[in-house]
Structure formats: structure tokens, C-alpha cells
Amino acid sequence: MKLDSGNEMPLYQQLKEEIKGKITDNTFPYGSKIPTETELSEMFQVSRITVRRAIQELCQENYLVKKQGKGTFVKHAKVARKIKYLLGFSKSCEANGMVPSRKVIKREIVELSDEDAKTMGLEAGSHAVSIERINLADGVPIMYEINLFPYQKFAFLLEEPLDGSLFELLEKKCHTIVSYSNNSYLDLARASGRIAKELRVPNREPLFFLYSEGYDSNNELVYIGKDYVLADQYRFYLDDPK
Image 1 (tube, one colour):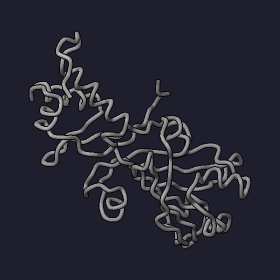
Image 2 (cartoon, rainbow, N blue to C red; image 1 turned 60 degrees about the horizontal axis):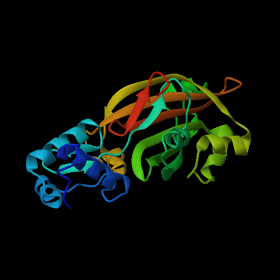
Image 3 (spheres, one colour; image 1 turned 60 degrees about the vertical axis):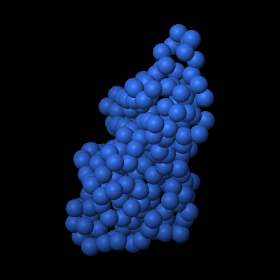
Image 4 (cartoon, one colour; image 1 turned 90 degrees about the horizontal axis):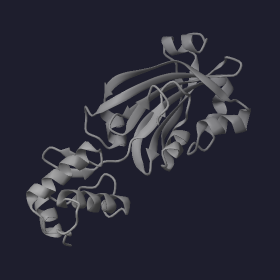
């Protein structure tokens, strides 16, 4: 394929548009490695300098990302979410034009730590339902989610399908509506072990750690959330995204 040398648009910009088009039509899928500079140069019959400039600008515009020693890859669009607003993963994805899905890693009854028991207003040694899931956007793992629910009220979650929105499930099954979050904060973390494996990233990959407590309209705690989020795939806004 030869670019139009008579076009008013410079060759590197034409090449940028060609590459963006191949990302849009899934010729270059999200997460895939694109052809090398030499291959692109031959494919579009342009110089490697032209290819290098096009790739550099596409990296700056967050279409591509270079991984040292591995090549250049298509960068998945980030999920955007306002940090001060209670918005579930499904709604966050839908707001960004992505399709949410989930993979349940495990669910079990666990003994709460002293700190989590205190947060739930329970005695030390009390139990909770722990649900661990992977949240995916357009099939790409984005978040390792750990939610703790007081056992006495939410034991039914051990038997429910958990491949959809937990907020919607709680409302349907026990008329519990999560109205607001409290004590939410962000920390930095590094991927390791099971979390790195399930998110398909190497150890020490940068993550956001999002802690939150969800409450219903009666100011009763519904869950404690501990989410590990790929920093490269998620963006938190302090204000409404425009």
C-alpha cells in the first residue's frame, strides 16, 4: 500500500491515520504488537524516519505504547471514572463505550481482620463473605476486585451467579441499594503473585489500590472494597470528565 505523495497532508500524518484506521477496524487489535518499523516502511513504501515519527506521535496520543525489548503495541483505551462519585465497574465501562465482563476467581467465608471487623461494627473473629473477581473491559483485564460482605446478611451471595453487577444483584435479591461510599482512598501498589497472573502483567507492574466502604440509605455498611487496578488502563477524575 503506497501513501499519496501528492496529498497535502504530510506522509507521517497519512501513516498515522492508516494505523489508527487499522486499530479501529481491529486489524491491529488492542494489546497486539504492530509490525516493526522496517515492516511498516515496506508496507506503506515510506522511509523509516516517516514511520518513526508517526509511531512517536501515536505513542504520545496514547494509541500505541513501546515496550523495551518487545516492540510497539496497541494501547487499550483507559476506563475513566470520577473518584468522588460512586460508580460501579459496569457503569464506568458503559460510560466509556466499552463492554464489561467478569471472571470469578473465588468466593468463600473468611474471618475478618480486627480492622475490617471494627469497620463493619462486628466483634473480632466475625466472618464475612469474600468475593474475588477480575473485571474486564472489552475482554481486557482491568481490575482485581476483592469485596467483603457481612456474613449474616449476605450469606446468599455464596450461591448466586456473580458474573454481573453486584450492585444490581443486591438490589434485586435483598432490596439493598448502595447509596454512597465513605473513607475511599487511592494508594499505589505493585502487581505480584495471583493478582499479576490474573491481570496478565509482570510482577511489579504499577497498580492503583482503591479502598472503599459502601453504605446503604440507612447508613449501614454493605461492603468493604479492595480493588487493584491497572494504572495503565484506568484513569480517575477528580472532576467530571469532559
